[in-house]
Amino acid sequence: MPLAVILGAIAAIAGAGLVVTGIRRGPDSAPRNMVMLIGGMMMAAFGILIAGFTLVYQNTAPIGASAGAGR
Image 1 (cartoon, one colour):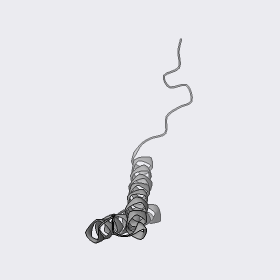
Image 2: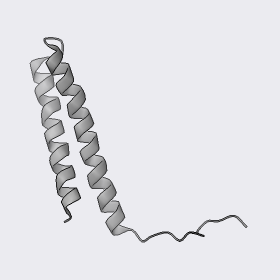
Image 3: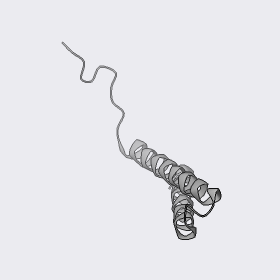
């Protein structure tokens, strides 16, 4: 398993942890909790994208330059 998949999974888990922490503390009680929610969602999405694109790139064949070209 490549390093990008591992880092993406770690980022997704850490981001989800930030979201849960921000929700438990209540986003209205302090601005820091709202920042934790927003940052956690962004971190989780970034981790999922990195891991997903890495897995797809590994498991698919490259497409030729003329594939699907109009006639």
